[in-house]
Image 1 (cartoon, helix red, strand yellow):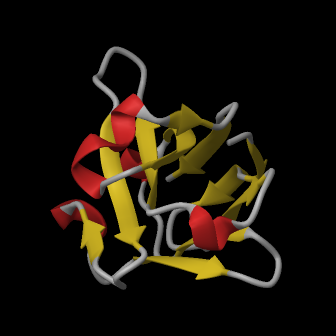
Image 2 (cartoon, rainbow, N blue to C red):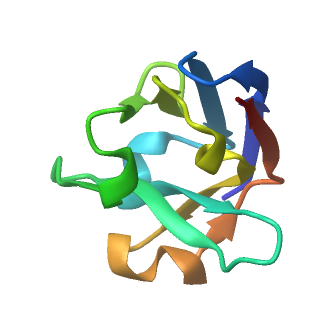
Length: 118
């Protein structure tokens, strides 16, 4: 599956940003999708994910601030980011795979930069 990302950019701390990931085929056929991020000099971490059963995952640092959702009609996976913090600054990647736990082995989007200024 091909994943094309949009959104991102620069925002001040406390603001909001929305990332979107469009799939080349029906998103309904994809068992699991998620968003990773990688800051300079750090490893790529899974930030949020969901699967076709409705199970969601969030890394502790974004719980209550970020929301992952899927739009079946538009074939998009979105990440709504609110109350962003400078530590949210990173390159964000969309991923698709068979399970949340193995998303890193699946398909990847091209990445989009998010920069949060204090």
